[in-house]
Structure formats: structure tokens, C-alpha cells
Length: 104
View (cartoon, helix red, strand yellow):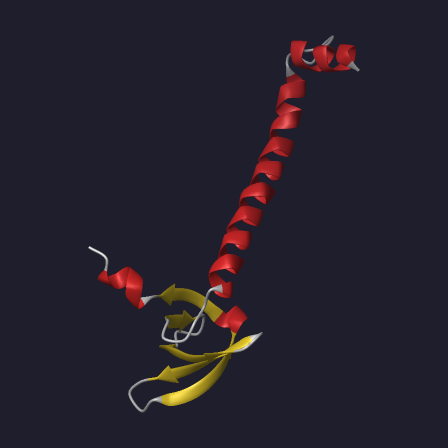
């Protein structure tokens, strides 16, 4: 096994260091999956802390204030007529909390 790895990195008989270039795409793919998984986990943590009073924006552009949180959906009050809409949690793309806006 060690001989094979050494053979690939030294260029082998006619490879000229080709082994390293064969491993780079694999490393890129692994890194991409790793960072995407971290991003998804962080967003799930943020969504689990969603609470009444948070201001949200959906993928469709609807902005409103959360009035109730369910397992898979949220009730949102939307101005100017203060309509109450039930929106799937998967449609939420951003959360703006009052606490974060007041910090200097």
C-alpha cells in the first residue's frame, strides 16, 4: 500500500505526478460536502430556536412576525392588514430577531 501511494506521488513510470491531480477533485468533493453539512446543521439549530415575535422572510418574499410555532409550520402576522398565514418552516429563508437589532 505504501509503495502504491509513493508511486503515485512521485509520478510513477510515466505519470509525472499525475496521482496528486487525481486526488485533488476527490478532496474538493469531500470538503464541499463537509461544509454544506455544517451549514445545514447550523440552520436547523437556528430554526429550532424560532419563537413568537421573531420577524421572518419567506422564499416567496412574504415578511411578517411569528405569532405561533408548530412542529412543521409557523403562523405569521403580515402587515398592513395583519393577515394570519400558516407557512411551512422550510419556506423560511431568514430570521430577524428584535434582540439582535438593538445591539450596538
